[in-house]
Image (cartoon, rainbow, N blue to C red; front, side, top):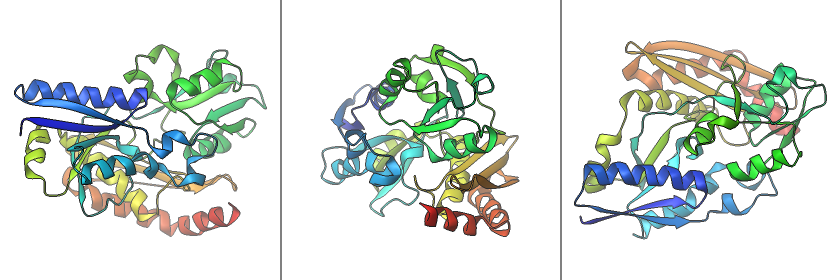
Length: 308
């Protein structure tokens, strides 16, 4: 193979991610020409409705998968949290890169923290998970949906459409916008989305040649942590319609997993946590799901769906 083509969304953050992978691959394989195929997805085009209402985060992935299948691209780079919990059998995750900061952050031009916001202040987020956390921990605040890429959302904040935004810290840091972060939000209140902060490389299933070229980028601890998190989401039907959080940390060969899910309408969430061996990530995810089911999470999610 002399040329490797990376399919990527055309947004600034997606391009940063793809160019990052491009540089790593060119450094490891100097004889290889690594090129980008830029694609504008439906998720990027439809900005006047929430992701939950137009089909979910898979909208950011489908067109890139089409490029893989028709041979226009050899691999696709994704924010792992945007990748559907179940891949079609013709695809696989070839590598999961070492994670950037997985936490949420507080962004505001006028206020230093959520605690400083006055009652009725308007907080923008594109995530039901974050909206639920605000409703539980800061019920006096108003939550509004904000779509678009990072720059678009920041522009809406700067125009005064919102008093603050809650965003993923990783995206701002990758784009050189860490100065916009007023504070990192504690995971005790704002548990991250499954696989937040991680990059995944999707390839055609059983494409051994491409798999070998990217194998060195796979980070074992991040793959284990995200496997546990995604198992929780998969078992609970995780999508944009479900406000679900899951976060695993690796310490000394052990995984420590916490998860929560609930209803924005009811302002309630169920939580679970467990620890286990690093190499049993999915079993750990199932154990946490069993805990949450015992607390009635399925009924809570069903009630949330009916209310929606």
